[in-house]
Structures are given as structure tokens and as C-alpha cells.
Length: 411
Image (cartoon, rainbow, N blue to C red; front, top):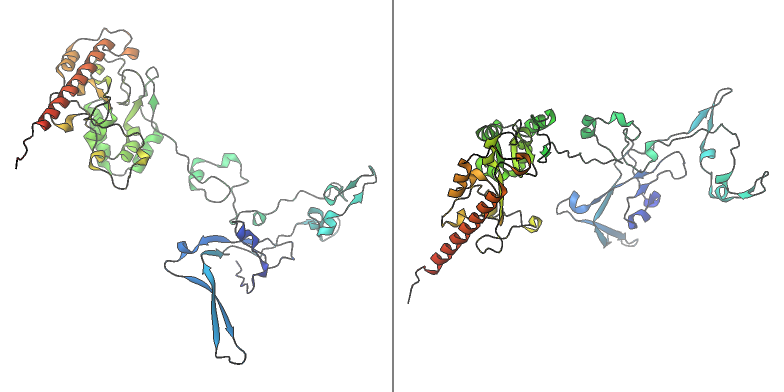
């Protein structure tokens, strides 16, 4: 690398600055074999902290050399640095077939000057006027194709990946690649398994998912907690997993792919199921069938926050940071036991109503098509849903009555 000190800006192309582009430095503009050095544009605020760069003009009088006049011309807010390789000459040459020596290919690749590029000539064969670019080759088949080096490209840093074969881009190379002219964003591949109600259920996680979970979470305690949780019960809702383990949402996204797969639809929709367990063949899985209950136009239950991006995430509230309780407790007047959102998904074993407990004690093993409708009939689930809504309504009325009967001081 050569460091060139430029005293005057006559060789710097300044029109790029006003067009919002980087500057080009050509310290030998008359030499066609050298490429320009492209500057790196930086804001002054990102380079220095609290330092002002001023453009000053100094004048010294001839009669009184000791008197100096200073004038501030402006404030510098953009810096251009030429910290790149430059002044490397690439000579497009071809060895002569007969004898020693090389031929210069520049006159055949580009015009030597502007007049020769714009000049017209008359084709003898067709009697048509053509430009230099359309002229036939003086030596047919002699001028080879010439690929300019990376130094003449629009990238500051040379790249060795642009002309490689696609087979060379393995997963390890993609993660380690650096350079210009390519997408440097890593591919975000979802390693968790999502199935529908009628799809084959996986029996084990993929090796890539296990390796990714072990790599992202080195602490053994979260792994132990999730393994014990799915040994206790094969199916859980996402709220239940967060409430039982207390793990953060980002950590759960990383670890769940190792222990369970997600069922998106059907009687067990919205559940994370342990690998190797199929609820469609086990009548005991009726305990984990999901029931969706929506509470609309309810004063005690806040409206579900749909636009989370509009919230101030830098200062999380205490209520939003606490995981939602996954069970339904009836008959309590504590407001914390009411559903915190207006749409809740419960497993039947997490509903502590007498009707739900009696329903789970019945024999439903002879139900038809459990993979589509579950082990419990839809009419019974609808009755249970209405009981939950009625219980929430009574609890809310009792809470309103208690607030109206609060004693007040009479002065």
C-alpha cells in the first residue's frame, strides 16, 4: 500500500460530493492504466466526540508580516478518507505469437481520446457511416476478451467470492463470508417443526435443531427445566410453558425446537407437543384438548394489545412482563384470576370448573374420528365455554359490587 499526500484538490472529483456520492482520487489522471481511489464518507459526529473542525483562512500582510488576519470559512461535518489501496497499474497485454514482446490492448479496448471515439468512418462494404464502437476489428480473432480486475470495479475492497461457483457456497462459508456486492445478512432458518392436525407427527427433533439449541444456550438449567416439564405432561400451551419455567420469550424460541413441535390446527391446536407423542391415538389426551374462549366488550378484561410495535418497549410495564396464568380458577373475586386478555386458549385439564372435572372423568375412548374432532364432543365443549363466560360475568359483577360498597369518610 502506498500513501500519497495530496497538497491540492485538483485531482479529486468534487461533483460526486454534491450528488451524495463518495469522492474519487486520481493522482495520475492522464494514465489510463491506473484506477481511481474511492473515498469512504463519514459524518464528523461519528468519528469525533465534541471536536469541531473549522476551515480557516489566514492572510499575512507584506508590509507587516507579524500581523495575521484570520477568517472562518465554515464548519466541517463530513470527512472523506482514502484509506484504500491505490496506484496499482494493470496492463492489458498479450504476448506476440511470433517473436518476443507484448502488444498493448488498450487501443483496441477503449478509444485513445475523445476525437477518435466520436469520429466517423465509411464502411467500404456497406457504404454506411459508423462510429469507433461499431468499427470492425483490424485483426479478426486476435483481440481477446479482457476482464478488468477488481480494482477497476465499483467496490472499494477486492472480493474473491463474486466469480466462484455456486457449489462453493456451503453453509459454513455463507456464515463466514464478508465482502461487497452480496447480501451479508444471514439466512434465518426456522428449525422448529409445525404440523397440522392431519399431518404425520414427528418422533424426534432434527439434529440441526438440537445442535442449534445447545449452541445458543450453554446453561444446562433451562434445558433441564423444559425436559422435566414435558416429562410431567406431554402437551402444553405457550402461556403454560412461560408461566411454569419463567424463561424469557427469546430463550423459549431457541429451546422449544429441541423438545417439542407445534400443532397449528385441530382439537389440540395451539399446543406444543413432546416429540414421539401422538394425541390422536391416546384417549388420555382428552385432558389436553384446547378450548378457545373470547371475552368481548368486558370492562374488567383489557382489550388485547394488537399493535405491540406502538408500545414503549424500553420501559416495560409490570403487568406486561408477567406471564399470563394458564389455568382458569372459578368463583374468586381476585382480579388477578380474571383473564388478562380477551381471547384465551385453555387445555381442558387447566379449567378448574366442576363441569370440566366431571367431563374429564367420563369415558370418551369410543369417539369417532378423534384426529379431526378430538375425544370430547363439540357440544360439550360449547357448553363448557358458556359456563366459563357466565362465571367471569358473575365474578365481575361481584367485584363491581364490592367497589360500590367501599366505605368513605364523611366530613
